[in-house]
Image (cartoon, rainbow, N blue to C red; front, side):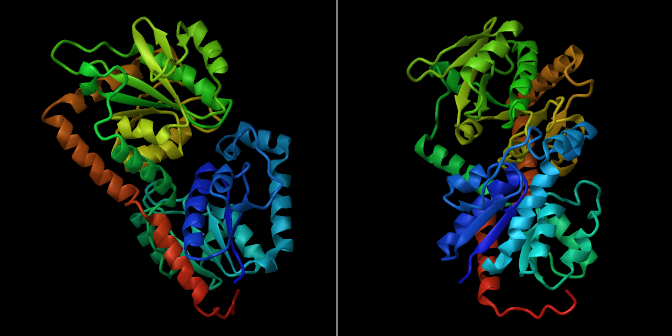
Length: 425
């Protein structure tokens, strides 16, 4: 059987594609990938062949979120780069039995130009944004064509909406980008039941705040400095209320300790190397932020609340029923517009303080909200009620784990079924 091609255009989309690809390979399906943005590290880590060469861009594929980002993409040649990739795909089109597009209109168009049968995981669009989804032209027209054997959405509301709009079944089977993280969280919880925060003893009852500055550089470093501004303003715990929280940052390997130390020093934070089981940390006037590299699942598993300037990571936190407090930044990804759209997508479990980006007043308001959220979690009456509400939000907005396996099983059925006639394509 000819291989399946996974065609995706973004970091979160690559995570989904790689998770789906791994499940397909377990079902005896050969898989290749073409990431339209970046190097496709998720595919490479999963051992899935990537059609190269690939390259990164400074906007991380998110230039469309602002005029400046679009101009940057044009200057760096991203538009020409994507056209070249699609040209390469067209020349190899006869190699594939099925193309699975993961993302938005761009991979849908890419799948269409191959002339091969296709399926679509439409992860970039949701009816939660506006109540009724308005697909960009010609996405809706393409998805009605019989050549697209299946369309999968990212939530049930979108599945219902698009089934009506397209006049064909659209299924919600779960979100594959959740599976690697949630499996990692389950493994962490199983191997370290009752994991104690650093320091042990009385610290075991202290709440944990996961600090997520994002994964794209150089934005992540700038985001971290803004988050430090929030943490230094966090009100101290009062007697009889919550304990002082443990603060844990989940960092990508590319965010080097030397760069963090240099950026944090002017803000009054002192970098301290790790010592044995103790992680490296930033210290400021009695407050301590642990620094953890490549331990995102472990940090999230141990957390009670998330302070975030991240996209996919915030969605994964919501899936675990963690309350999320956003801090908008200058971008190019985590801007005010991006953060506001994410709140509409993920629901009331995600909050954000008003105010101009990066201003002291906004950082102070965010810190007060963080303190209030910690107090709410610690309240013996309000805390359990809130956690049940967050679990319901997670089920509604993101679904259960196992989306990769369910989509892979449906993909295998498509591969095993006779080709449809392509009349009208």
